[in-house]
Length: 354
Image (cartoon, rainbow, N blue to C red; front, side):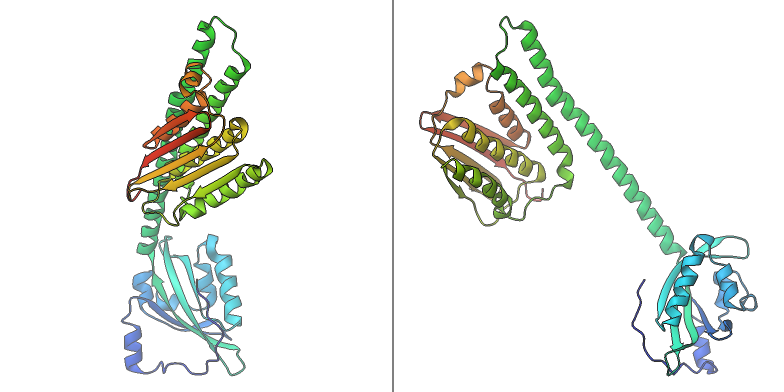
């Protein structure tokens, strides 16, 4: 509802003019005029009979108007109207109006407050419009939106069930089998790796099902700046130099799932550098060789490790988890390591309009 500032009004249309009255009574709305002092209708258009079913004679005072407002809207509508009229403010109101056959129909009133030179109300003139079709359309839209929301929630639950079954569930089954069939006692690093895999799969499920609420940053700079600030503080404390290279804008942005997957990948890769690499220099670069591709490269000059040996030992669960996460969003992860150099490269295919 729109309220307009108070204005001084001393003139009103010449209501005994035949042309003016003909125009009023040819509209698809109910024109009316109310004397403020007596609170009586001095005029109400004959359209009231066609639109609401009441005769003009049955609409005598504002009490008739108030009594025919739906109980749910009556107090608020009446008190608001009185308050705005006393302030000399034009206003609008929407409410359900009673018909003689005890039905309620939606109407909208547009009220113009006439004031004397002192700014005191003297009369109200306005129109009452039938808006039942508009309200039906609004109700239908609300029902469709509610149905759409319910379907989206159902799809979220189904995706979560699927992810837990295929991700976390299969990981647990694999671990249980490894424990039952293994002849040796699992070492602490092996148990820790298994637990990390469960954690990573759970994160992936959460990311997948929260992606609808995630906003992809408007630029690579907006995305990577918080990560750079957070990790640079750690690198500075450990005297590790770090270079970040990225374009100022997207050619094609990643979708929400790709953005979440790469964010997790960067966090895990840089955390591994801090924990295990003994590096003194790290470089992260993000490029878009083509409009529909994204290349993330993270390299350090640490001690390195034997990728195949770590993977075969069962301690490379973190690497496999990262590779699976990238593969799920249409990408490929490559890890290359030797003494003095470890490089991690993620290649993603982007889809325009994702």
